Length: 132
Image (cartoon, rainbow, N blue to C red):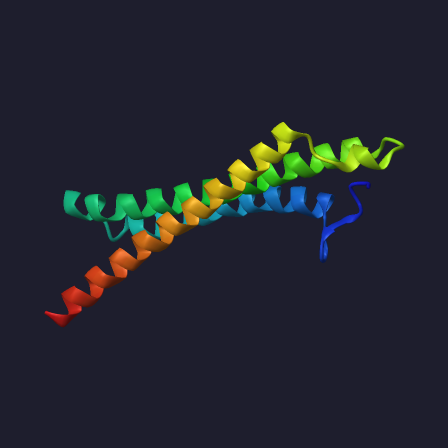
């Protein structure tokens, strides 16, 4: 397996690493634009208290997404380096690599569930505020 082979439909290892780089670059621009756009709306400390958590959450989510892509790239890089060997068993992951991958997957699932629960709570609060 080389870094030009597909790791899943339409994506190669090179594409994945390019996506990681582009996501990071685009996110910096997006955050800068977001902050510059809302800067004019912030007039009191209450505005800061309301807006700062939203920006922080946006940045945290972006960082977590990139971390998962980087972990995936690390696993794929090990597979690529091991697959350059002659025997078929070189493609297999070691037990520790399998545990690390499963842990990463579980962390991702937990993060997604927590984010879903948080967004559901915000939605319910918004509905309750509008209903009153």
